[in-house]
Image (cartoon, rainbow, N blue to C red; front, side, top):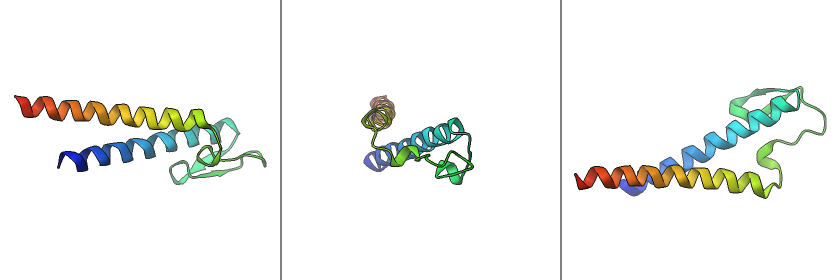
Length: 83
């Protein structure tokens, strides 16, 4: 149960962060986002979605924040079991 919750936390937080950063990049390019940030309409012709870019800093931030969220959920679960 604990492991499946941690996997779900990591996956959901990764997807939410990717969606957030993709929406932000689309709006910065003057476009309108749809499909939770996976589609950007009306942006500049050379616009590349955030999740398709080769940007190590982006992936480090997404994976680090998702790992931190997962770590904190794990700590909360552990502290609840010890009580």
